[in-house]
Image 1: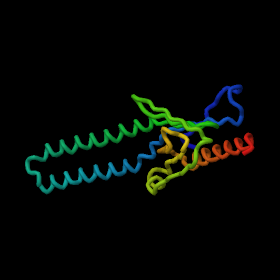
Image 2 (image 1 turned 120 degrees about the horizontal axis):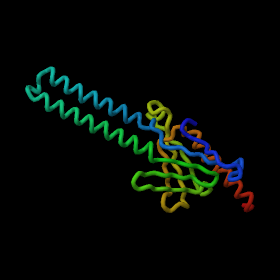
Image 3 (image 1 turned 135 degrees about the vertical axis):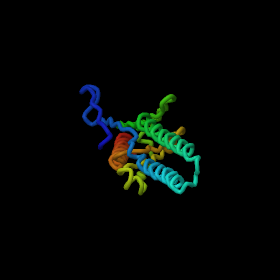
Image 4 (image 1 turned 180 degrees about the horizontal axis):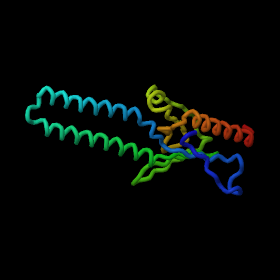
Length: 184
């Protein structure tokens, strides 16, 4: 997994089968938006060049170019602000018992969900995710036992198939262990 790390812990703290997998939002998930912004920028600049060459603007071409430049700076500034916010503030962690989601910059929100209570897990990869965004995806998790977030969406995952399988296999193993212990 390219953006996931297996955390090392002292030998006495965790046993050999303890899972502690951490990853964060992948910037590759925004490649489609970046392509759209590039095409929009080219269209605006191309329109300005056409209007200047055809002298449609007359003597007012300079304020139009200042407006175009200012608009492009705002557009790309917005894109990079969203990119930095998502990549620096959205973090996920999977252990043998729970799934954690932490997000936010000024107000930090942390959600956790017990894996044993997860009802269903779905992997979603759009055509844009597979072709343009480098294979990123989202994982949707349903948990009727969680009153605050019965549906949890993990977005911008760089290795979604691996994470999906890890969540699902850990959930299945927990349920099997529980049925053995309780005799259900």
